[in-house]
Length: 211
Image (cartoon, rainbow, N blue to C red):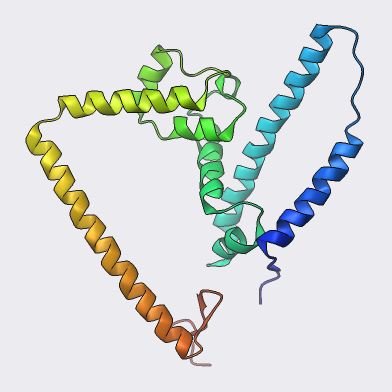
């Protein structure tokens, strides 16, 4: 039996909000005498925000690698104050930074903006660097605009036959996905009716377990 205790997202958010209120009360504001001192302190706190989300991403990576099968998904779905999409973005950001793809000092203090950078291919990233998009004050809008530009350039370079082939392949894959999802729902409904499913997890014993 796992030692992981499930809590609802509402409970997790309540605990987080309580901790945040305590942190804000403890975070007394110092009165500085000049702009440079305020600028330094605000910049320091902003950089700490980046360190925090990178650390969260690292913890998510460690949890995904070390928790028993299924527990990571349960934790993300029921035990954290954010959902699967944010968890995925934080993991990709931590992977990119720890993998050396981005120099930390050149990154903005927003995980959503850094995530947009992680979606670039290596050739696209090289072009982004040439255009000065790898800098601390780059915005998410700038990266999205750049992605659209390179997508248009790639589309212009593709032949009509290539575009038609990709569109047809995508349509086929979408149909296969929908079929698989329908079949999965039917199986899970049948398992639930038999009492073999709890909280989305099968209660069947592992293969080869005759106990």
